[in-house]
Image (cartoon, rainbow, N blue to C red; front, side, top):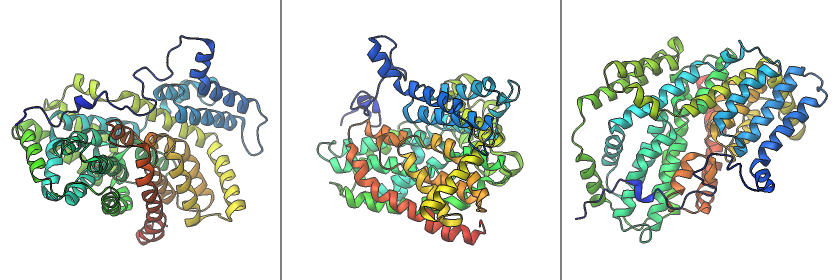
Length: 499
């Protein structure tokens, strides 16, 4: 029996990168001909020109000058989010100094808008995920879920989707993909390889990607977009706790676990029926590392305690503070040190969402969000006769769902969230319902490779074609929209008394 590692992705690292993949920084080289330099910077030039044009145009009726400047920045940021004209964390820096330069806020006040409990929460979730990975807890939990599921291929797929969905609710989507991908690749490899079992390869990769997509919305810790929405709601005085979010969103995830499993098995009928020998081989390799150490058990206990704290005490202490309590406890017990956390935490992500929160507060403070919401309601009323209630929620969810397939879910919520929540207030519709529906709609990123990092990561192994996402994702997109608008907003949230 070969001794090579079967859950090691090193062999796949340099194969079939997603379209547009480059190891160079965003923006490309500054060398080359003027034409090439222009081509590399064309989106940044467009963003700047739009910003200047809006700033110089006459101020529309009902909008303040500061509000006009705020909308100019909003449009600039949308272009940058869509095209990555500059690195996204750099966009957050632009959000800060622009407000000071244009007189929207002072250099003392603007930095305060970057700090929010949601920012600490995002940072804490990233650190918590790094701690779990350090002690290999992720692989053991994944295999435990698969052992519960059984060895039949349909049960394995169900276990994969379920693990990815439930895990993504607590340690972010991209971390969950990183956890499950080696196991998925090992299953395909030990079943004969992608040339022998192409449908199994497609099935496992999409089960992982779509599993994290449907799971990243059922808790606030499932993605930075959810923390952003919490921040926007709280800034308007709409109090919402961690447990209340789960109560509103978890039915969507539970239903979609079964629908995703059924649909993928129907589309990509696997070449094998039972994976008993394959799973035993993977389990043997994971077990070779020995049982969980005392430190690993302590790390797991701290993680569980933090989750319980989020559910029970988030409205009292804030989700960010509770996350930091867990990280500090882990550091005091010697489970992690600062150097490890510094290396493993994606500080650019933290900065990006701090800037997004600042932009949201700016749109509200200047009246720009109210003005944009008024225009949205007027357009919806003229075009569709929609003024409030469930039809308005359907419109905002649809806009979010289509937008999230062209850019990341976090930026989608960052620039649509403040406007939609303000529209809900103006239309005498529950901001809570509109806000959570917007976050849920931002998860419908089934269609394109660029829609979410999860899609790009699984595509990068070369098991999938771009058309596979459209083939599998079209039905799931429509089904998800129907479940959120009709099932959750139309029935479940009314039973909960949300509106």
